[in-house]
Length: 451
Image (tube, rainbow, N blue to C red; front, side):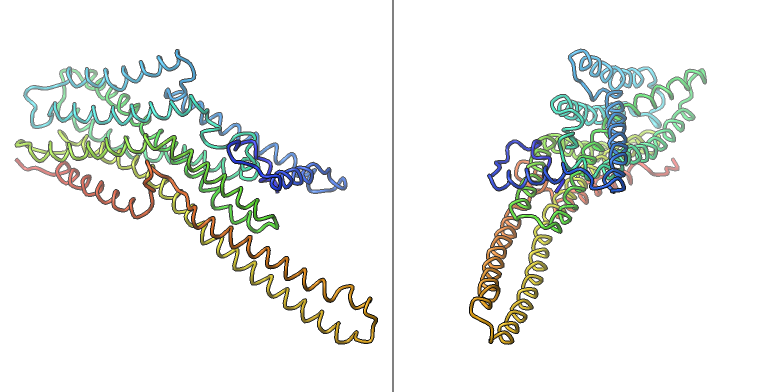
């Protein structure tokens, strides 16, 4: 019944008098004090406060991390500083590095147009991530963007799951960044060895600047995709636990209201992130096609040194797109599975109610046969009216459940991009197209040339 406490978080859903009565009844139940000094409620209160403090700490860490990389643009000053840092570190510094470290006699190990194209592709995907995520954070804030607002009853029920998902955001981001950073470092060290300048200190400075600028752009890009993945995982937690709501003995209107709330949240997520997902996908696909054309039309020697950044960029972009598409597909798959969950619940409840009704009818008939010598007044207390009311109540409940199942099956939500549902079939098609392009690029770049 705690789920009924977060009706404030969804003002757009119309509340009927019956649902308002159920909400007030739930609040009255939650407001009842413990019955004794040894009750479990008094013992669980400190645990709930501790979980709330841990969730608040996790959200603060997430907001601090996003603010450090310029996503939290809550004021014009912070917005200006964020974009200045992006243009200096993510764009100007790499361009200057390419210009001043270019070797005219090293065409075998350095191709300037390849490096500029890689820089532009990485800067565009990072700029899209910074622009879309900062816009959503400025408009909604971290809590509302993740749908863990203080007035949300789900935040009370699933605090520990929310904390695990938030810290999973940092672990996943660190893992993928470490893999890509190792590949980038190996490529840059190889370039320093083959393109050694007059001073080792100058070569070390070029290496350090290259790694810092690349790391900044990579963190900005992957942070945006990982944040969308986090939003999707938090919604998956709510959808997966919807079956727990059905196990409670509540009115069918409550189940419908909770399902409407889930669909409302999914619609909000689709509206907030559809441009981000679509732009990232188009830019990554265009980048892969461009890399494919550049490497195939080049008449010179293609090796890991002069085109290794294509491989690193392809892996980085593939990781970001997989994080986004997997979260979108998981949301759609879990939301569409609610239809089968509702059917299973309806079947189980119907079978249980039929079994109990038949047993009561047998008991009542036996009582009527054995008590035929009683007066009509005594036998009429429980035989005719109880069975008739039982059938009426069972029939009414059955029709309510049937209408609820029909509603859920006809309103299967999911993550949509301008009306297109991102499901597993679409994800498989997109994934194998991207993977084919990336494998072709890797096959053209990671080669051993004996010339």
